Length: 371
Image (cartoon, rainbow, N blue to C red; front, top):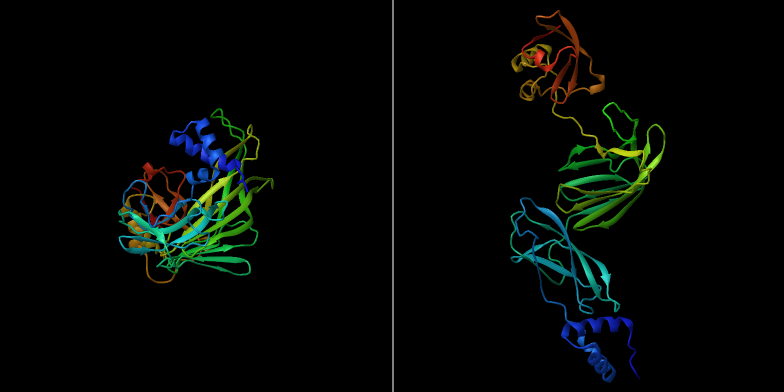
């Protein structure tokens, strides 16, 4: 029975023949005389026993870092359920793998890998067949309306229900570091062609419609968010987005890839600002007595309590009350000008004196006393 000469075989073998220096007429005669010899030119090659890998710039990393990469395979050389392990100078590293593409015969064509490269490593990595010798510690736990990603060092709580937030909280080593986070966009209606122009602006906040866990460990987890921005005043929905969070086992950092699709009017819809707004809890701030505050301000010579002075005045007693419920304190300011009274409010670095009538330069050296 005569073997069928497919289009795929024609393109493949003609390319190989051209590289070998065969003329078209000579190659067609050989192919017609012996079709099986054509396949011998591009016959499958066995998979290499070991693949050597290295960082692109060759420089050692200053910190442990999660790394993802891909490796191609010859046709028919690697089975679709093959396992791999990764080592560096005989030291095993955690490894996660997934298929990216297949050959027509079902064998692997491309494989994706994820690992954590230790700091200071400058030697090449060795990828070889066989099960991984080190298991990652990353875990993904799903509840009714939430998802918890635990890398071992970082824990992120994500709501899977439709809502405004990308995540609800992030803690590191059991300590809460940030609260809820959401996307924010500032839309400007028209360009600012002149300094006098003041186009109208509106704030848009994220609306998450779908949350998908694309990978769940044990070395890397990928969470995909899909949604759009919604205006706080107009209720307009625009600028669809896709955000992906990347987590790696044992790591305290989260990689974010933010993709938007501009679906507005290019003549009047200008993106003035775009980013993620995250709630950060205040900690380690205590009540400051008015007398101590007066001394600290006099020592700093400014109308702002310095960071060092505020740190010395913190007391290990009762925790700081909620900022919104703090009673306002009145202060009298004395200088060569008539006496004025201003209101103080609390900031992260201590108390900031709200004195619109006094610039920073004019307020320097003023004696501030608590009344």
